[in-house]
Structures are given as C-alpha cells and as structure tokens.
Length: 413
Length: 205
Image 1 (cartoon, each protein chain N blue to C red):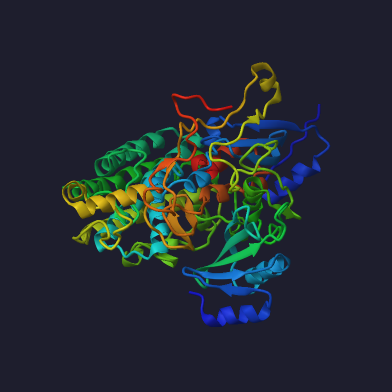
Image 2 (cartoon, chains in turn purple, blue):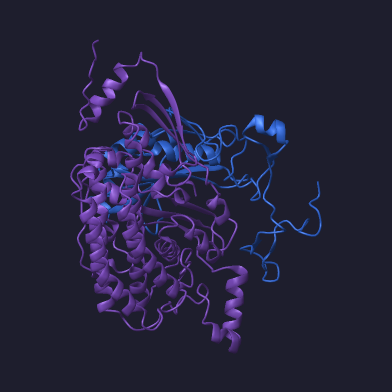
C-alpha cells in the first residue's frame, strides 16, 4: 500500500495557494460559516470552497447587522445621533462618541477648554484598553487558550465599573456632547482610575506569560494571515492591523486631535504582519495607553468640561435651565431646532481601537446633517479576507478572524 | 499639511480638475473621465497611497446633477487628507468609473455606494449589493426613500411561501420626531413627519 505525503510549508501562503489551485481537479467542498457562529464574533458570514482542509475561495457576506445608521442620522438632529455612535463599535463606545463630537465641532469651529480635552483623551485611552483587553482575550480563546480570557475579562469588568461611575452606563455610554462632555468627572474617580492602571500591568503580564511564549499559541499564529505592507495600504487597513504590517501610521501622532500632541507615547509596529504581530501590537498599545493616562491624570487641568462659546449647541447646566429664563430658552431651542451648525463639509478620522473611525458630514446649515457617512474601520479591515484567506487551512480561519479584531456593529452600521 | 505649490502643480498637470472652497482639507472637483488618471497620479507620484473613504451624495431629485461621488485620500508624507468630488452626469442611471483596480480598498466602498445609491461603477470586478440582500429592489440612502422603509418580498422565497411574510416598513408610531432646519420657530418644533397614523389609529392602507 502506498501513501502520498504532501508537505505544506506553513510559512509560505503563496505556495500553498498555488498548490491549492493546482489540485483544482480534486473535488471541492463548499462550506458556509455563519452568520451565527462563534468564530465570526458577530454576524459575519463566510462562503468558502475547501480542497481537503485548504481553503481555495473565501467570500465574506455582510449586512446582517445593517441598521441604516447613515439614513437615521439624516433624519435627526446632531445631538440626537450621539447614542447611535455607541452602537457602532460597541466595545469602545466612549471613543466613538469623541470621534463624532470632534467631527461636528470641526464644522462649527468651537474651541474646547483644556479640562474637556483631557477628559476626552482619558476616556479614549480607557476605551482602547477595554477594547484591546477583549480583543486579546477572545483572540487567545480562538487559538484554544481559555485562561487568558478570564484574566482580561476580570480587568475589563473593573473598567466597566469605572465607566458606569463616570457616565451612568456600562456599555452604551453616550458620554460626549457636541461642545463638551455630559458631566465632569466625579470626586475621587481619577484616584480609582490610577489604582486600576497601577494594577493592570500585573494582569497583562499574566496574559503574556500564558500566551506570548506559548508554543501552541506561536504555532497557531506565527506566519498565519500575513499581510504585506503594500497589501495593508492598498486594502485600506488602519489601526493596529496596519501597524502590525510595519506601517507607522497613528493618527494620534500624525494628525493629533484633542491635545494628543502633549503626551509622550510610542507607536508599536510589527514586522511580518501576521496574526502574532497583531497580537503583540495590541498588547503593547495597552501599555502605551497606560502611559498616556498617567500623564493625563498627573497634569489634569481645572476649569469647565464644556465650551462656553457653544451657546446654540451645548445645553446649559440643568440648575440654570430651571432657574433662569435665558438658559431655559437656549435649552428649548437646542432641543427643538437642534444645534445650529453652519453649512459646509468636514471629514474627521480618529484613531480608535479598531482603526481609523471617520465621519464625513455634509451640512446645509441648521440642526440636521444633510449627509453623514461613517467610515468604519472594521468594514475596511475585512475587505482583505477574499485575498488573504485562500491557501490557509480551515482551522486558521478562527485565528485570522480573531486577530483582525473587528466588530460587526460597526462593519454593517 | 498640503502646501500651495503642491496644489498649483497638480492643477497645472490636470487642467480639468478645479479647486473648490474648503475648510478642512484640500478639495478638488474632477470630471468622470479624469478620475482614473488623477487617482493613479496621486497614488504613484504624490504619495496619496491610502484611500480611506469613498462614498456618494444624493443632492435631491430636483438637483441638476443628482449624484456625486466623494473620495478621501490620505498621504503619510503630507500628513493630510485630500477630498475629490465628482458628479455623475446621468441622473436616471448614474454611472462612474471604478477605481478598485488602483485602490483595492475601493472595491467594498463602491459596492456600498452601488447598494445605497444605485451608482453603477463600470469595470468593477464584482459589483453587487453588500449590505442589503441581492434581490433588494430599492436604494435606501436616496433622498426619496422613506426612513421607515418600503414593503418588500422576503429574501427567502420558500419561507415567504409558507409564512406569507414580507419585509415590512418600521412601525414609526408617528415618528421620527425631528425638527426641520428651516421655517419659523412654531413650525420647526419637533413633530412627526407622518402624522396620518399612530399607535391608536391604524395606518391608512
């Protein structure tokens, strides 16, 4: 009896792809994954052709979470849309709120006080930590390591308690307003953030001990899902995924907003652009976020948490609305007519945990946007699947999807 | 930041491209026929190698040119965005040249613009709906498409046959309660856009 052994070089995707298509005469199997499947982290559906265990074609099907956020935005005032931004990347709602608010503020030219900018940087970085903690934990689980997930979720839970104290909600925070934030930080909250940040590195170290040099984890992730620099740019990668491919693009450094230029931090970049690099970049980003948070808290400016210039945009304080005629009228106008935004167009991108979240707003004046386009990083980061996946084994799919760290709520909008 | 020299040399190179007033980033108007050449030039000669966004705008049924396509490019050298507006000349069946051969990232963005606005991107490798299902008959982000949606057959014909179900418009309960941006104050109070039916009174058929 003769057996034929086909050796597959794990490192060389191109060769595997060529081998896969050379065997085209053998019978292929069509496999459908999703839209409801634990691998796909939401409702992504993949239609694949398999040749044995090797994937020869992968077609992502989207839209199962399409809610028409852009259409909804055209039918409500600027302020009313803030809660909808929570539901884009629902793992980092605070960062989405900030990105949207800055986009609208750029249209109006409001200047924000220092304290407000610092609060925004602080919540953005906390959101990044929370999103990366989930990303790393779930990625480990995708590769078969259950324990790290427990460590990261314990820490994430502590963060959510902090979010709840600040915003009143754990998940859908709706914290920023156009022209400021909803409320000042509570007494003692900054100390509790500091306490959390002091303890987080221990947990990250534990996760690293479990994963970073773990033989099984390395075998599952190294050389898998490699994306070259050229491909990463051509397919519109942004965020940690782009940086893992070795491209040094971080909007916090390159086009600083909300006062990021004041803080010192490093931008980690990868070399190979494989699943392992994407994991390493996220781990390091958490540590860098902690550095930023420490600097923000050490130099936390006094003052107001909203812009006083934003008279026709930001609602006045509640006690003034209830006691003063002028503020009552002002509040009434903001609620009925919406914040008055001048005509024009603006495109703003913020460096969110998943990548660059962009808002393109066309205003014809008044309180309602004429067109609002959401540039969702998860959407752009997924379009490479069709090119990247063929040639990989079926079992690599879980790792590849986990390493891209996407959220379907944002992808489908 | 993009400087004036860059803008001038670009405009000299492309005589049909014009600059328009802009507040946040350099904004150009470019005709359909020049789009591919301009994008190729920007990518290869001017370091605008990241297409971050491509979308469309519906200027309303009464506009002279109803649809335009807007793209945003980013340059890591200039550290700035560049916006390109292009109008679609045909209002009835809008067409636009696909740039997905230059920027593969445009592939999905163009599919989305086709899905939402019905703009046909010529030479697109796989132009089909991306967010709505393939058989969906309308273009939801057009201004004449109602917010609640339109009754549509269920995508799964076999299920529809058994259940007699269809995709129904959202029950708006008289909403959305939205202020209009113009008119006197008494008229711009939040009011239901469709007041003909509420929770108590049936929707007129």
